[in-house]
Length: 293
Image 1 (cartoon, one colour):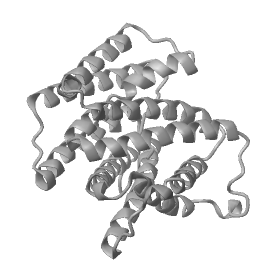
Image 2 (cartoon, helix red, strand yellow):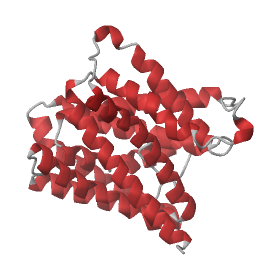
Image 3 (cartoon, helix red, strand yellow):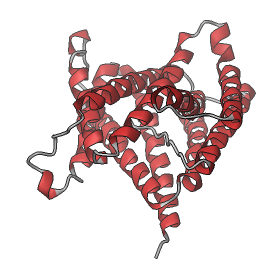
């Protein structure tokens, strides 16, 4: 029989694995319009979410007392997911994953603005270290005017506000309702891109595109369970296994080998994130950031 902490580790590990496979499929889907991939993410992402709605909420599961905050969460989430989808197509997998680890840095900054949190010396030091890491990773892109290096940073900004919004919403709203509105908004928004030309996928590609949604929805549920059974400080370090998977997948499928600068920058970003999480636990004010895709 597993202990709660062991279950937390298991759920976090499974979440990282599922997210990594989803990233792999998104990168593979470069021949399909981003809007079309988003449609599958939204539509099929509803499947795992709808499966956990309580029976007594089947009729009115969509009701909420905080529609404006849901709208803000969905808009910031849409910005984040579009940015990460574009980044995954245009940049090496390990590079994208490395920069996304900087999300807690931006969450720290936004928490000052939206939650009026006080940030001390150590967390500001962590923010500085993290930004140095981002600059090291992105420097080749900035020097050659590769605009795609901006997209993982946009993702971090969007995800940071998502984390703030979810922290507020979760005080009154069930996690499945938060996920439902996000997936539904992705699906509806993606329909506006049909005039730009969608491609009819074959059966194999349809299955793979559908997996983007199913995996994304399932990974978020696994992540939620991980935080439910174990302390954030115990399971969060497992998230950095995503870089290992990104390096392996990138090499096997696209022949990508991360440069020394990427690995060094990723190390600084990870150190920064660990400091932030440690300080949040110490101060009893944890603000967790998950993928929420």
